[in-house]
Amino acid sequence: MRSETNIPPATGPLAGVKVIDMTSVLMGPFASQAIADMGADVIKVEAPKGDLVRQIGPARHDAMGPVYLNANRNKRSIVLDLKQPEGLAALKRLLADADVLMYNVRPQAMARLGLSYEAVAEINPRIVYAGLFGFGQDGPYAARPAYDDLIQGATTLPHLIAKASGGIPRYVPTAMADRIVGLTGVNAILASLLARQRTGRGDRVDIPMFETMAAFVLGDHLGGLTYEPPLDGGGYARQLSPERRPYQTRDGYVCALVYTDKQWRDFLGAVGRAALMDEDPRFGSYGGRSRNIDYVYGELARIFLEKSTAEWMTLLEQADVPFMPMHDLVSILDDPQLKATGFFIDAAHPSEGAIRTMRVPVRWQNNPVTTLRRHAPRLGEHTREVLTQLGYTPAEVDAMLAAGQAAAAPDLERN
Image 1 (cartoon, one colour):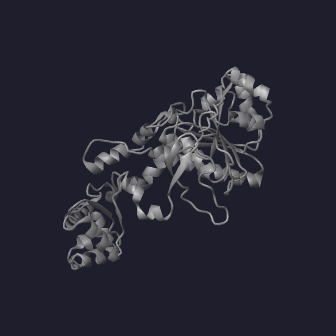
Image 2 (cartoon, helix red, strand yellow):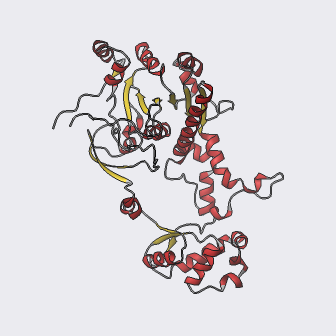
Image 3 (cartoon, one colour):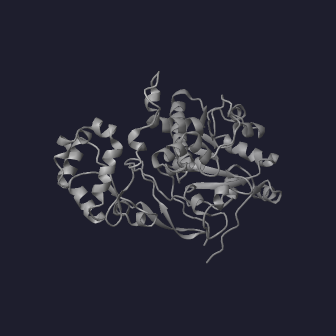
């Protein structure tokens, strides 16, 4: 197979926007992929060793692991050694007409490279200079490195899991902080581009992980600590109930949420216990249920043991009570909703062969997007292309590659 050819023109609400993506691992690449999915030309600038996330998970070829593939589509990859003057000079050429620069190293590292906001704004005063990093730069943690696990711990998530489960503290088993902060970064970048339309000026935008996740978690769990003096020790009782979990049935599990008064009446009527809301104040109102949530959810758990999963799903649908199956990583691939909406896409990657990917969940009527305009690139796949577009001659590109100032992926062989 050869590299991608006949790339369709960019479509979507961000078509025509140029983004220089210096991020790596997950938070930044997840954010820049969302921007690329909306049509932007995202140029992923990688160090000679490449993005670390390329190495995560099982892979058919080195540096093309599944986490990388699912966070870097619709981008071009160029390899530059920014520690060499010629590599840094090429990056600065890229920045001259870029709309956005994204990075997720600490700001101090950017400054050491000569890429502080002030330096970049001298090259291009219209640029949106977006940093996704650990901590706000006006606090004592400013220079610390940060990772998803650390931010989860610092924003109380393992504590909350232990409190709810009665077990030991654990991290949420997904890169929750990386992805939430990444999406927050997308929002901030798009807002800055909108502001630039009015003012003509770019901006420096700091998106710190710790403060972003603290706001995300404490919006639910600050609770009585919202008030001064505090009304309680914090925490959202329903979310912290040890009984808030998928309900075990006679032969499996089902996820159900009986929430409003109407849902409770319909549910209890369907299981032959309609009088419970009138006879037991613990069930009679939202306030009563909230104050006795462990008992209420515990009673539900006992009720759900009486029927099979299939029986419950039929009953819940007939009673119009919200429910969903409890999928595992294989069964979700056959979910009828995801199948009907074409969520999973079977594709042929130019180097990796047959792969499964996920479409852009959002749909635009007037600015439709192409989910797979470009597959996740091999390391340095577009180095020659991008440098040529910057005005370097073929001989100059060859010289840079020979000197290690840049690197390019080898051409793929024909079948």
